[in-house]
View 1 (cartoon, rainbow, N blue to C red):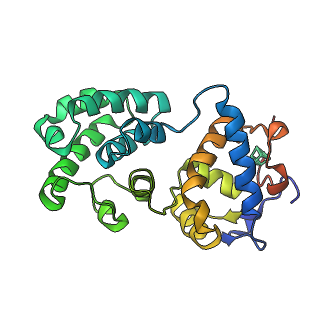
View 2: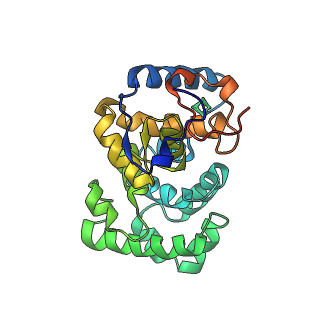
Length: 240
Ligand code: SF4
């Protein structure tokens, strides 16, 4: 695909005419991640929390909520602090909202998150016998839980198929020209149609890591990119 092409200008949303070579893309990204991990730990914060708490759904839900609009290192730190005091919904409900907010600080919107976490703890205890639901629709009914959070909980904690679309997945999917969409929700729905199911769970951690390291929001490192042949560089005006 020619560099700098602006398919978004047509205003049309949907998948690209030609389905991307997903096997080549996912294979290249996995190889890149293996090489990166030889140097240091390289996993998105929620995946790290999921590993640390043995995929405990409550820990995954709490850390996913904390991670929204928050840097990875802050998510890790605040998740550890909050889960030490509130390892289950009952313990969270016993904390007052100010205490939750203090433990969540400096995560973005920590006061709103504290209020939502307390409400979620009450609902999970009352409606689900203290167990975080494993169903996407039930998760979406919890306060402050959107599609990104719900998908991350079902994939990371319950090992179910889901596609978590965050800013990185949305940006890279559009930039490469694999699809054209206006919102992360649209991106998720298109990916659900065009991405083979076997890649649903892996696409988020791979693209998050790629977006943090190479396909950065401003001036991506195209000269070091390992998926250039799969990328149309849509609306990429400046790169390194
Ligand atoms: S780094 Fe550049 S070439 Fe690679 S996916 Fe991003 S925009 Fe495309």
